[in-house]
Length: 519
Image 1 (cartoon, rainbow, N blue to C red):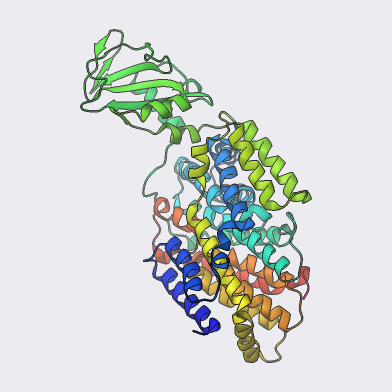
Image 2: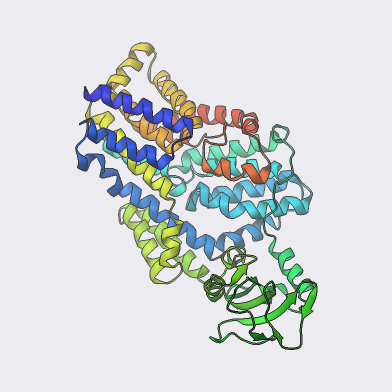
């Protein structure tokens, strides 16, 4: 088969598979790479080159940095400090939440910021008597706007910068995205404040953990006089376990205040049904509830042992505790990475990998945590789709599609070409991953820019802006899906508020971007 025809067929099949949502994203991406090899479009090293691409390694390392801030309670601390002082009015809460999630997104990615703040926002909404839906959709949408503030905000920013370099342009600076990101964020916040009626008024489908309420409940149920900080602190905490049938603990003599044989955990209190087992020794029976206290790592390790059923996962509780163990190291390493990225002393991938290694070596995160924190779906998606972009350029497919587009546009000029490309990216971005969209459209945009003898910079930055405009469907971005169940949203709820935001982003991409980055 002709390489150009094969590339186009593979593209169409990939988009169809993405849209169907029936084939796992990772399978589609790997299938694309393998199809390019089997059809002879690319050699095997070229088809698999994405898995060793510096951009992919950069993105993977950023997930580890994000995990360190979340696991050590830095994001919980920031959220509680800022949102806790925002009052109870919807407009003020929305403004504070939007600014906070945008700032976090710029440093640790959209998904990490939304996942970290989502439980806190639901709790704050409940305390303020506001439907959680009124704050959760703005949370996700403001995060998308915040992704344009810094290079690290989203994988799309990294990709368009690399595309610009490969096309003979220059890379975008670490803070350069803020030239468009700040006005986009400001406009987004205005639309969110004015568009309150466009968001459905629905209660949370399920309530997340409220740390203060949880500690108060434990004190009441186990008749403890300890305060919240003693029960759930940065270094030590408590967890509740139930003795399972056939547990090796059954028949063991226990009393409140005693330690386990290894001396790691203390039995603070115990219950047997409605009876509080306090003051005397008792023989453990199946179904007994034990309240254990110890270091968070020990609680996590021991609660996974056979015979114990954990009521609340210690790792989940630990993430809700502000500024836990390793928080200062996480902040320091993050700042070091930002300095390296901002000054350009080392390539971006090197800066992020150094940060990830430092977090593991300083035991801020464990090796297991580091591996688990990486969104392998995102990594495989980008690694598998990069060869398709390579094929578009190498086979001349991008030039062919660009020629078709320019022939339809005639002598309309660069703004018309940019408008057509952004419209294509905007539609695709609502149906498939915005990262996949940029990997497909970027080679075409580069070919258009070269054919018209224009700079690639405005085209690439416009794609970054459009890539962030994933507002019309819940499948457009993982952040939209994250808030769907807690906010009680339906598939058709997103476009009402999403449409004016998408049109605003489109206008910024087509009209504002060329003013800052001329053709």
